[in-house]
Length: 198
Image 1 (tube, one colour):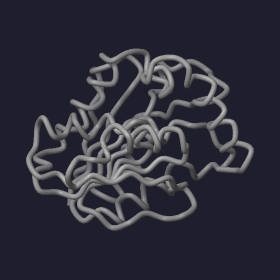
Image 2: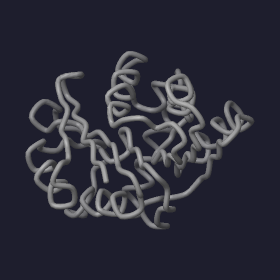
Image 3: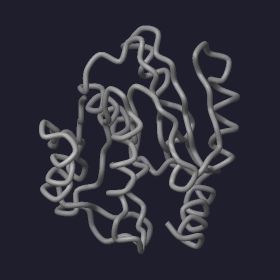
Image 4: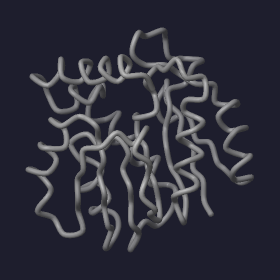
């Protein structure tokens, strides 16, 4: 993702910071966020796993995981300072919880058990290999698996900031990495999830 594209993403979210936290993140409402999180969690039992949340926003995934699993080690990463500061203030006191400001597109990813990306791969980029490069890097750095969601190009309309992807193309690519990669759709009209396990 080029510098101007990153600046546009930051401006997109900063413009919404005065509203609700979900509005700042770009979600329509709490129901859509919850449905995405619930679908990502069908990956399996995250108990005792180290989780990297790419594009963590305010860290909302952390308490969601804590309500369902035991002893989750959570690392949230976002490149917007305002999100990371707010997440640290809200949740940084929790055990096994850390937040970092970093551009995971360029700085690389730490090795963890599971990598999750909810909504953070949907930004437009002139790089035709995006998000394939990120999916490949996620798979390489996760010792147990990956779960991520994308907007469905068949339903999601044109947008200057976000873009949708064809489910079949994404699943075909993921099958090259994990022949058993699983696609889930139908939980929201314009979203789908990929689950990959090692």
